[in-house]
Each structure stands twice: as structure tokens, then as C-alpha cells.
Length: 239
Image (tube, rainbow, N blue to C red):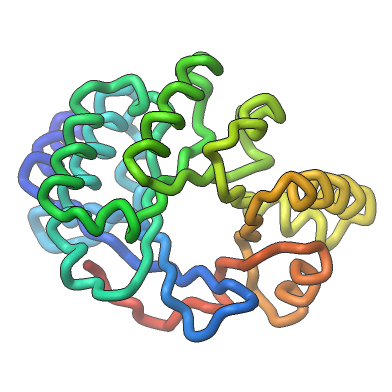
């Protein structure tokens, strides 16, 4: 099956990363990148996560992908020099002992992992209890790792979760940002949410920045930075 093929590819280190720049508005040049997961097939094709996960429905595939991504990241970190990178983590991985072992192994192999990597907790589903998630966040914080909430506006994040003192960064999903750019009511909602998060000390990143006008819009709302086509090179290559 395709799911079995994906699992075999993960084991064979066929994971690649495409670096997507994250522009912090008060910093230059860009040194922070989200590593978008890609899969190299046996015939050399590069598939996006949306493409190779589209027909995967078993939680095991997502868990194994997170482990393979940590393993791959540990291999390439020495090549990234002074760059800081972000990587997606499924919520369900927070209760996967093998994922925790991969994290601990990465910290032993490359101690700079803790200051070079941000873990972006994705919004696909709420598979971990609020109390369990807070314990996991506290453990990651104690390891010296930075935690971000990814895709705000599309999934299951609640204000209770954002109240965690261990979360430092909140990324607004591009769909929410694009709606705010076009819909006055959506803009009011995003403006209010930004005001609450900014007052609470969060760093906010806007996804879906396509034009310089989008960046100015997000600057005016108090975002710390943005991510999108405006900052992405034509051919970023793969890691």
C-alpha cells in the first residue's frame, strides 16, 4: 500500500526539507527558515507533504514522519551554521515515546539543536489532553527548546492552550491572514486577537505574505514577522 511505501521511505531517510524563509520585520538579513517536509521517491520525484500524505489515514504514518524528520534534521543541522530553523510536529507525537527518544538523541548528538530549532505544533487534531499537552510543553521547555503554535485559525488551539507560559510564538494560518486582508469583519477579529496575544507577550508570525502591502498590513497589526511568497526565492533547493 502507499502508506507502507511511505513508512519504508521514512526508514530509508528519503525525507528532504525545502527551506521557507521567515522574515522578522526588525531583523535583517533573513536567518530563520521553516523546513517544509518533502519526500523523494525511488524515481527521484520530490513530493510535498500534501501530496504524499493525501492518501495516508493511519496515525502511524504521521508519527513515523515526525520521527524521520527529527532524524534528518539532526543530520543536516551542522551544515546550517548560524541559521535558525522551524519544523512541524504533530500533536499526537507529544505522547509518542519514540519521538521523545528521537528528540533526546538529537540533543545528545548535536547540543546546538536546542538553540537552533523551533518546534511548530500543528493544528491537525486535538489528540492530546490539555493537561498532557502542558506537561509536554513544560518538558520541551526544560530541554531548552522553543515552542510555536502553528496554523492558528484552522484547527483546535484554544485560549487555554495559548495561556501556557512555555509557548513563545504563534503562527497565523495563511487562510486567516488572507481573509483579514479582504474582509473588514475578519480584520476586526484578527486585530482583536493580535491585541490580546501581543499584550500577553507572544511573538506573532503571519503566513501567506505575498505582496509588500500584505507585509505593511501585518506590521500595522503588530505581527513580529511574516512568511510567504514575498520572501521565498524561485528555487530554494532541498536539504
